Length: 229
Image 1 (cartoon, helix red, strand yellow):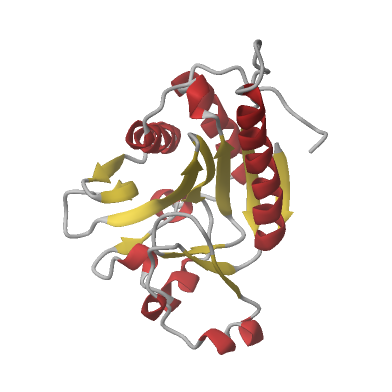
Image 2 (image 1 turned 135 degrees about the vertical axis):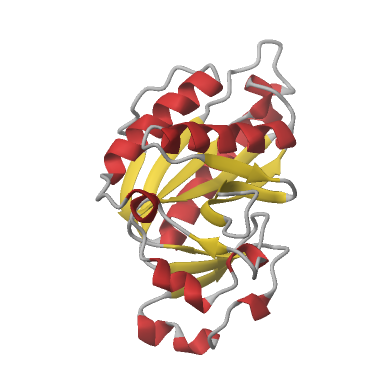
């Protein structure tokens, strides 16, 4: 599903509704001789400027007064995903997989590595080499150097092997917003975007299509467009 440019809270509520519907189906299946297959959703969108703080995050990683954000047209939310504080905004590709991992594999660590691999393969099509840093979920450029910089942040929630939230890939994001926070709680590394790494104006929908194809291949899934949600 492509939700376009959407308010963060609206998208969070819609995600939660889909997430809960999958969980409810799994619970109902316990009483059935023939279980009803659970749905899996892959959602793409952009958000208006917003800072989000994960359940394990620290509010001191927001470097401006919370009450000053409204005057700057920036929203702020504490949410129930993993990870610390990050920024979402226009030019950043949000990908929310709401998957029943019982349909794939029941391993959260593997799920995160698969998401990272999808991003690494996507940005490689623009001749940008992404990598991992052990203990720091997400995708990095020059991961093993002092100049390491993050191009993609991740944070998920899972219950009964159903996932929500997901990844934020900086395509042509205004990186100045990251100066107001300590992104993901990591103070000694920078943030970057696909546009900054290539020097090119890159179409967000093109990146979305490439990532969708890598996702389908990595998860061995057939993806079709759902216009009803």
